[in-house]
Every structure is written in C-alpha cells, then in structure tokens.
Image 1: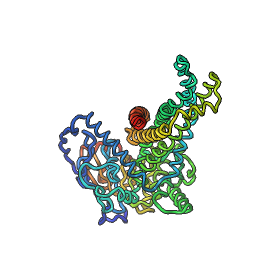
Image 2 (image 1 turned 180 degrees about the horizontal axis):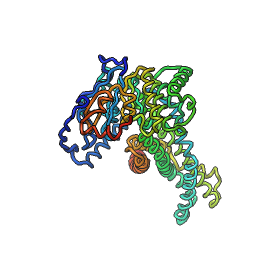
Image 3 (image 1 turned 90 degrees about the horizontal axis):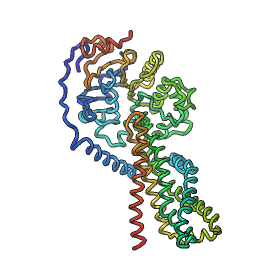
Image 4 (image 1 turned 45 degrees about the horizontal axis):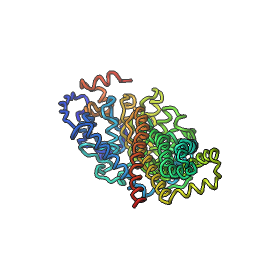
Amino acid sequence: MASANQVVEESPKESSTPKYVISKKIDRFFSELYGVFSFVARFFREVWFPPYEFKEVLRQCYQVGYKSLPLISMTGFITGLVFTNQSRPSLAEFGATSWLPALISIAIIRALGPLVTALIAAGKVGSNIGAELGSMNVTEQIDAMEVSATKPFKYLVVTRVLATSIMIPVLVMYTDFVALAGSYLNVRSNELVSLSSFVVQVFDAITFLDLFSSVIKSVFFGFTIGMVSCYKGYHSSRGTEGVGKAANSAVVASMFLIFILEILILQIVNAIRYA
Amino acid sequence: MRDEIDYSEKVIEVKEVKKSFGDMDVLKGVDLHLYKGENLVVLGKSGSGKSVLIKLVVRLLKADEGTIDVLGKRIDKLSVREMDELRLKIGFSFQNSALYDSMTVRENLAFPLVRNKRLTRKETEMKIEEALEDVGLLRAINQMPSELSGGMRKRIGIARTLILNPEIMLYDEPTAGLDPITCIEINELINEVQEKYHTSSIIITHDLTCAKQTGDRVVVLIDGQFKTEGTFEEVSRTQDPNLKPFFDYNFIE
C-alpha cells in the first residue's frame, strides 16, 4: 500500500482464467445438488442439539396448520363430494353404487387426501416460507443473525421443517375426514345411506397399512415441502426478483418432488401389501 | 487522532486476501490492519469490494486466498462454535440496518441477547433500555421496524450490535441513503460508541464527510486494491490520478 500523495501505478490487469470445471450450466447443476444435500445433512446434524426453539416451532405449527385450515377444509370437502359424484355413473353401470363408500374411502385415504393436502400446502405454505426467507436473505436479516451468533439455520430452517413435518400429517387426517364428510353428503342425498352404515363401509374397506402409509407419506411430504421451501428461500438470489423466484421455485420444486415421492412410496407400499 | 489507540496491538490483520465471484476479481490481494481503539475508514467507489472485505472478516464470505486474523485468531482455522464465540466480540452494522421486520424493536434487541447471554428477564430489559438510550431511541422500543425512519433504523441496528458489548465494530455504509443532517448524527453516534464502548472500528463508506468526521486513519480501495493510506487530510490531498477525481467530485468542506 502506498502512503498518501504517492502516485500509484495501476496494477496489470489479471488474466481472466476460466473458473468453471466443465461448463457453467453443468457446474451450476452439480453445485446446486451438492448444496441441497449439504442443506439436508445440516438439518439432521442440527435438529438434535440445543437450542430447540420450541416457541418458534409452535408458532410455525400454528402458521402451517391453523392458517391452512379454511383452504384445506374447502378443498377436501369439494374433493370428496365431486369424486363421489363423478364415480357414481361408472359404478351404476354395474349396479354397484353400494360400493361407493368403500371406493371413495380407499381413494381418499390412500391417495387423494395426502396428495391434495400436500399440493395445497406446497402452494400455500411453500410459497410463504420461500418468500419469507427469500426476503430475509435479500435484506441481510439472515446475515445479521449469522454474525450475532444466533444460529439462523436452527431458528429459521429447523423450526419450519419440523412444523411442516408435524402439521402436514395432521392436515392430511383432517382432509381425509372432511373429504369423507363431503362424500357422505353426496351418498346420503342420492342413495339414502345412513351415517353408521357409511362409516362401517368406510372402515371395512381400509386397512391399518392404508392409514399407516398415509401418515408416513404425509410426513415425507411435509418434510419435503419444508426443506425445499427453506432451501429456495435461504439461497435466494439478491434483489426483489430473487424473492419472487424463491417463492415460485419453492412451489414448483415441492410439487414435483411430491409426485415423485408419491410414485416411490406407492411402489413400496404395494410391495408390502402384496408380499 | 485519538490518544487511546494502541499501535502495538492489531485487532484485525488481513494479509494478501483475494476474493472473486465467478470471473470477477473483487479483491486482488489486499493487506489491512486495524489497531486497538482505532477508527479505520475504508473509502471507495460503489462496487470496489469494500463490503466484501468486512464480510470476509466475520466469515460471511470465505476468502479465496490469504489470511485474516481477528483478535489474534486466524478465522479460517476456527470451528463453527469458535467462530460464533468470536462473532460475539464483533458488532456488524449493515447497510440497510437488517432489522428483523417481523419483530418489534424490543424483540430485535432481545433476539441476540437471550440466545447468547444467561440473563434474567429484568437484566435483559435493562440491557435493551440501556442500548436504546445510547442511541437516543428508547421511545421506539415497542415500534415495528416498518414504522421507523431510515436514520432511526440505522440507530436501532447499531443498538442491536452494542447490546453484546462488542470489542470491534464493523459499519457497512452507515450513512448511505440518509439526509445530510442525519448523516452527521450517525457520524457523531459512531464516535460516541467508540468513546463509551472503547471499540475498534472499520467504517466502510464512500461518504467523505463520514470519513472525515469518524476516521483516525483512512485507506482507499480502488479496483480491489488499496491505493493509499493516511489521515483524511493526507489522503484527500493525493495527486494519484486514479484517486484525485474521487476527492475532487465528492469533497465537502
């Protein structure tokens, strides 16, 4: 460094050597993949150790669960009602409308309930988390937590992933119930089936494996939504555009992974069922 | 220049640090040291790498090459836990204040305190009030960040760092986006903080008034390299053709 008043010669321009191992796009893909795995690994490293941030977990459970209830209720109810209505003509051709409660319960508990809930949660909760963390990243709030040694990953990510992993299964059970209620309303108005008869048929059709796999699947869905949304928000690019992109990609990536998980879990459950 | 500066003790020592983002070389092997009790101003144009430099000091970014020692510890060798312990001794005031916008001012100040110090609720409250009194904003204790002006947000941001009694303060563009009167108030606050908390500070700025009012020593960062060093008066008289326009166009008597 020169002292004041000294004229300093401009340093020769450094040669711009290529900094990519293969190509920009491929490097970025592998770097993103590595980032995702590191992020998930960091979650499992940090979730066991204090501070546990119970208060924040509860607050997030309230945000994820209670705040999603109106939308989940409406969607679940309509799904049950419409699915019953659309299934009737096919069963009526074989004179099998009495099987409606059994068919509907299997469809709702095995697939529709978890899938509809997870997709709605991916849209509502995923975009919310992606935008919130993205905005905090853009305005350097996450950096501010980092430099004051307050463990932002634990406070922002671990709490949200725990909340989605806990609350999505609860919401799925609630959606199953509401969808069956919608279905019952339709069956009741068309076939004049009593509530007790409807309930008996529903529980006769489903097995413990159906309920268990539904809950386990929902935990995976919740974990995926939380993890993907937090990752996208936590690593959003700077600027307001980055916030929008984080929210958008959180939803798209969550939904995509939910369908992939659905297929994978279906294969595993079928393997167990028919073993 | 202040009498309390201890020229025998360097609290921050940056050696041959390089940092690039993709093809862009931001820092091209910079050396810097901060003495105990000193206010060091890093002047430079926007995009010259000033903010990157102090983010490297708190390990928000990682240097590609070179070493950084803070309070005698080489930061790239520290574990996450050791780095967190070191960070408690460093206050970082962000350019846009970085207040947690979903929390009140009280909660903003309590957030780092309750997570790092074992204090009773009463002691926590007293510390919060003391920090807010130091920046003259006790009245804003229950307000949300969105209800505060730019100058108030800067002050609250500084109060949030002071609450942990840091030994080093890093100010990233403390007067950016503020009116001239508020700028002078912030400059005075930086000096008051230095006197009361006996901090050593690096002040990143392109505001020459801020540099003049707060700096014991000034260094100028141009194109990723330090070009000159001295008191503000010395530096502002530079004849370096790369630096002269910076002072000619900006200088405010």
